[in-house]
Image (cartoon, rainbow, N blue to C red; front, side):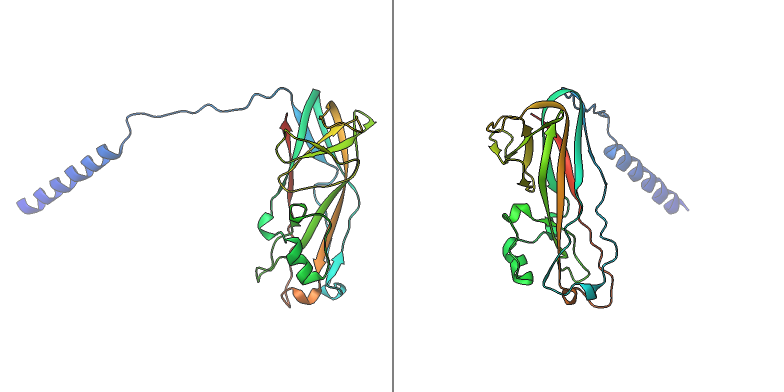
Amino acid sequence: MRISLLASALTLAVATMSFTASAADTATMAVTGTITPTTCDVALSASSVDLGNIPATELLTKANDYTQDYQSLSVSCDAASQIALRTTDDRAASAYTNADFQTVSALTLPGVDQNIFGLGTDSADGKIGSLQLVITAANIDGTAATVLASTDKSSWTSQGNSYLLAKNGYVALTTNAGGTTPDSFTEATLTLSPRIYLKQGSAYPAGEEVKINGSVTFSVVYL
């Protein structure tokens, strides 16, 4: 019995020492947030582009164009603000390069690799297709605007009133047709044309549904 009690006491002592050693004698509370010059909200006229059910038997060619109806992207600020929009491909890992897409589809897409967004992958880890987004018109505070593009938010180039959006790129607007400095505004609207390209039906896994799963995020960036 004495041996048993001694073992129990030793176990309790070790457990107590372990607890004491692992306990912290301080705790930290973080206070975070961001103070912005104004508040700007960004919204799409439709939260998704729904292609519905597409029978694989209808995908007859190596590249099948499913260009969709125009979508409006609007920005509303509570005061005049100089802002840009950043475009992020949430499915970047599934995006084709132009060269790879040409190999599987015999189609060369406009622009460069940065202009091609992903649509997810199938069960065989094959890339489903390609998405491109084209700005076809823009206005700020009711006046027609020129699109400006940048990769670093400091150097801007004029793109006229039509521009193929780039992943991780920035777009801003100006009413000065030859200008390269983003305007401040309270309301802006951009018209987007989603251009979707799917492969031939036989290129997807047979006998199963393939979920198209593209996702693009537009974020307000204060300049």
